[in-house]
Length: 324
Ligand code: BTN
Image 1 (cartoon, protein in one colour):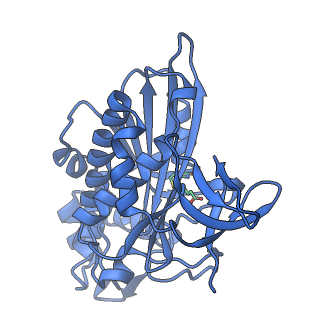
Image 2 (spheres, rainbow, N blue to C red; image 1 turned 120 degrees about the vertical axis):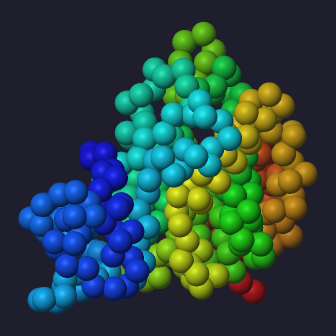
């Protein structure tokens, strides 16, 4: 695990103008030696960042790259008490926060890269350096785990809220339980890991993977249809602003959930979700069940009308719309 050094962010900010900058000038701007600059360039190349290097001219980035900057994110936060750690590289931001489980504060962790990013159902979450958001939140609840039903749906609503604020107005929906889709393609997903504490308290580690500036999956790692904010809006996003919007939304939604429960979000869920009225295949650990979605119940479980007419509630699974 490496903390994100501000110098690397400064270097990419300078190189991001598309012009060539020579090692000496970069060293002067960053107050470091030419060889230290060279080491940072090599580090960026190891992270798969495309750098053009021309003898006599110096280095240039082939496309903009604004790195995460903890101070820039903090400036945008409504609750200055939220703890935030920004890492250059980590196995998984969820695992990083699990080690802090004794904390009484809300703690966020974002990383430029995850080397062992985790998705739901033991899938891997492709986490290339500098392109997307890998953000986790450690949230200490004064509630028993059994009272957290519906929380994962609330998190999805918070993500949609932040995406809409960032300009993705149309075509963004929540797909029960934890996917955010845009034009039918996945743009974000959430992995929630819960643990019980003593005296009826609990901790949630909520990890969000959001595709922001990723244009291609060069390594062919993503098995499902996907999109990104940049693909949708054809513009490069400063992830610091998106990260701050996500943190603000998560904190507001989770605090309201803690006070008022899932009931306070049912109306919003109905207006943001995409499955009701559709024929859906629900993949659970043991089986795939097909039926027509009629909505959710008070606990946030998915209600499906099965071919025999019975309406059943499901608490977990992976959903896909069956095309007719
Ligand atoms: C899914 O849709 O399968 C959930 C993906 C969750 C990915 C995020 S990225 C940040 C956090 N750290 C992880 O290892 N996973 C989550």
